[in-house]
Image 1 (tube, helix red, strand yellow):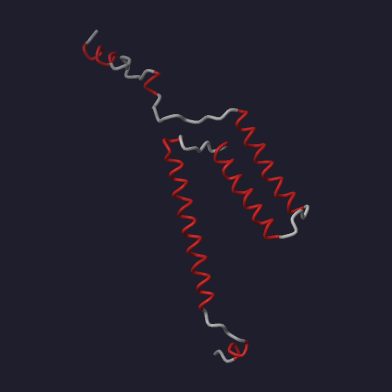
Image 2 (cartoon, rainbow, N blue to C red):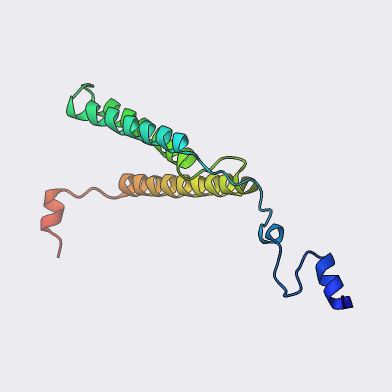
Amino acid sequence: MSTAHTETAAHGHTAHGAHDAHDDHHDDGPVSHSTFKGYMTGFVLAVILTAIPFWLVMGNVLSNTHTTSLVILGFAAVQIVVHMIYFLHMDAKSESGWNMLALIFTIVLVVITLAGSLWVMYHMNANMMPMSVHDMKNMP
């Protein structure tokens, strides 16, 4: 055996430069792989979380439309969480917590953007000079 062959064999490589099966796997942390039961649980929850708001609207169960809208938004938020957990496999442990950190950062940016936009639109509307029909007739 030559010295070069001995060194490659000592590092887990064969004489032809191929890697052992152990070298092909990278230790990227625990990867969450769901089972058929996990996917079916997510599917059943998603169907239920879709059917209930559909029934609320089509059956006109709640008389107040604002209450119905808030209930539907609540079901939508729960369904987003179900999809993230059961189908996207996102939790605090996946990718060493980077997925959750990216999600939180995205939510913060969306909330800031929406709140800022609503604030600006409200104040622009409140501070605009009202125009009457008479003022519009005199416009060039």
